[in-house]
Image 1 (cartoon, rainbow over the protein chains, first blue to last red):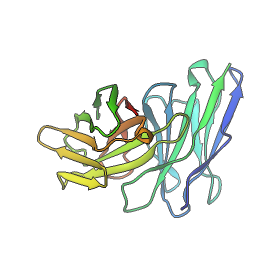
Image 2: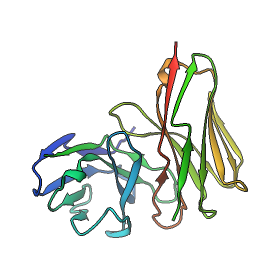
Image 3: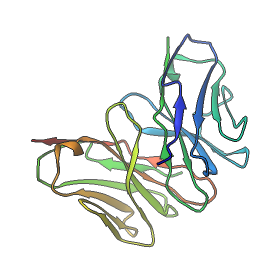
Length: 113
Length: 113
């Protein structure tokens, strides 16, 4: 059964550095999402993406964040200048057109020191 | 925007007993209500969902009920087993465009053998 994949599984970076988190959604899915989960807390929405543009974004998704679908398979989240409070698990999710179910990747644990 | 409240935050049951987790939502336009199971360090896994045009859905030992008037929905797990131990998240969404999931804070279920 196809799954969403994410790389790396764990990223450690220094405050102020740029990071790029990568996701490969399920191949026939059209809608893509990034969520984050601070340790022990709920999953929070960051941004949704469809047809090569952002559909919705949350208050968390400020100018330091950007998303891109550079080719037909990858979906990336970039954080330009990381802050300590960006430390979290970042999940990518995708869903098919005409379906409601969102399928999550295994996550990237980002640690900002 | 949508707000989802989830109770209880922790739940311990004896193996074989039933577990019930309850969620309320605020946006009457929400029409899709999934439940995710998250084991420690793993991705959220969709276990069951319900759409607003039905009141109940069952899949083996798990069931979900929806009361649109009261804006609440519940997860029922019968004949609990130790492998049911995990954090369970409810979520709500308006499935129009690319509207994201709004999650509850999660319930840590412990099934004691």
